[in-house]
Length: 139
Image (cartoon, rainbow, N blue to C red; front, side, top):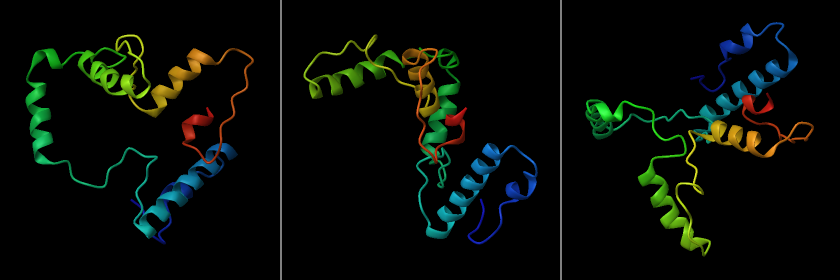
């Protein structure tokens, strides 16, 4: 992590990289410095600033001992999870949701955005991406 006022080593290494990449690296380096300076929480990065509690580490280790837990899960979300989500959100929109066909649990924002783009955007369609944004969204 870069301390406030300290120069990020990545900026020194980018040299003649393409402008888009250079701008993106500069922007994220500047944001990292601001996070440190103001002790802010980044909602754009999956990098918590706290130690994982021991009970979670123990539960993870224990679950890895069960052979059935060492397989790929259902790509749209575990059946118990999507059912629980449908049970909570169905009444909010005043209709019954089919958890197996109308609820999607994604592996994060990138996966969800990719799924949406592949589902709804056709060849020749225009997509507007507001910046600054996470670097992969411009690709």
